[in-house]
Image 1 (tube, protein in one colour):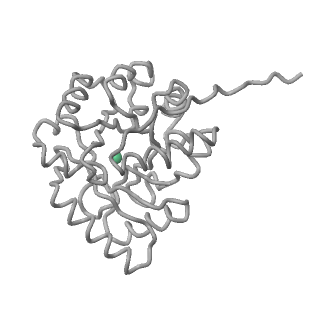
Image 2 (cartoon, rainbow, N blue to C red):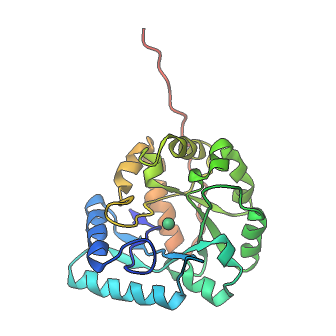
Length: 250
Ligand SMILES: [Fe+2]
């Protein structure tokens, strides 16, 4: 599996604090079947990570993992706040694209309130050659009350990333229900950990993939779609998840 959302780089944001924590995260992910992790530090007003800080962190962690024999590839990336987006030029954005393929940008979806101008933002990025990936919208209350509202942004070209801990219920019932609904409606393209420290939202991609309840779709979300994103290639439409059958027992 490829995990395209993590705060594994030490000391840049509210994620890993030390290289020991980063190693622990990566070891746990490797045990879970993860072969590559994108380092996506926050790029927002409280953690205004610069591209060169992220790149330096990725280089250091790569070297450390080789020395430590941790078999996980670290990829560049960033989790860009929608407000910060406007202050970044094309070169800065390109450097924050996932795996620096030059195509896919992970955008932080707010936890409350509907982001104004979301569809225009997605469209505008498209004109500049970038594709938006919306990070964990299932945790947003507006999306929870109306998951279909994401449809317009998806039609504009956005992809949707669900967080593993939402899907397996660790974050709570509302996020889980919204995540399931987005999967059933074909509005989710990617499953990722959003891992911060070994304690908070630790990897757990394997458990979440199982919670999808559909092997083909789970593979799409954790292997096929992320591999296409890393390669900078188009992501095909996700296979539709069958609604859970309910049996009446007499
Ligand atoms: Fe995140």
